Structure formats: C-alpha cells, structure tokens
Figure 1 (cartoon, one colour):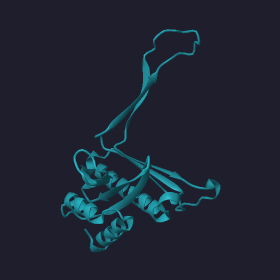
Figure 2: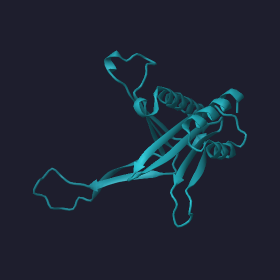
Figure 3: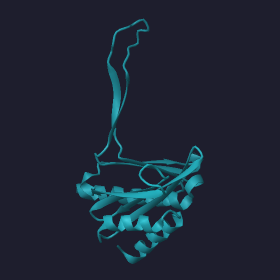
Figure 4: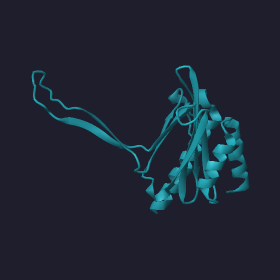
Length: 193
C-alpha cells in the first residue's frame, strides 16, 4: 500500500466510527501486503424494530484483486451472551470481475456538466459468485386464455450492489464511490487488453 493512501483509508475507516480496529484487521489480512490502488468505505445504519443495526462495507482495489469486506454487529443470542461483531472479506481476482455497473442520479440534468456532482450512485459489481433469477408466470394477450404458459424471467449477476447518496453519506462518499468505480472499471478493462 502506498503510505498516503493507506493512511487515508485508515482515517476513513475511523471516521465511520464502526469498530475501526476490527475493520482494519480484516482488511489487512485480505490485502496480504499487496499495494492499494483505490478504496471505498461505506457505513450504513438501519433500524430493525427498536434496535439500531450498523454495517460497514470496505472495498479495496489492488493491482490483481478486488477485496470486499463486510463487518456487522449482532445482538446477544444463543451463541453469545454479549453483543458481538463479525468481519468477513472476499478477495476476487480482477479477471473474474465481469461487470461493473454504475448508476448515477443527478439533479436538474439539463444543467449537469461533465464531472459535475451526482446526488446518488449505485455501484453493482458481478463476478459470478451470486446469480439472481426473477421469475413470474408467463401469459399471453388473450384475456380468456387459461393455458399454462410457464414462466418468464431474468437472470442477473450482481454479487454486490452498494448505494451511496449525498443526503445519507455526504458528497465526499459519493465522489469516493465514483472514483472507486472508475478505478475498478479501468483495472478490469486493462485485463482485457
């Protein structure tokens, strides 16, 4: 890792306020000393009934791999009498990444200029570990038809989908998501040359 980028990553992990030592330990193990090219830190808080649940996703790009880390906290349960957290990482070789989808939402698109800010970004990355199939009953245009037409649907490869917004995460995280998406797209395109 370059020292400056590594220091900024640590600062952003600490800024998320979410078990920074645990998140950093998990990421350090997955990086295995490989140089860091780009990263994205996303902290998400959700409400589950009366409880606040927190989750952090850290994506790191190296010259050869995409590292995806998730850290979640858990309330006491039958396995533990105290609250606990789990941190998992997945390292994906760049040649396995087969889709990088970036959806940006901008205000007043008629006034948008190249490089201008986005209100929201959804980054969807596929590498073949998870495929989703959405099915629905097929039909025909005859409203009186009672025949079984089987099913129709779509199959999509979306191992990870991450949404960041200016309102929830701040403009810096939205910029970071776009920077990371650009670096990942460039790295996967370079593999095809």
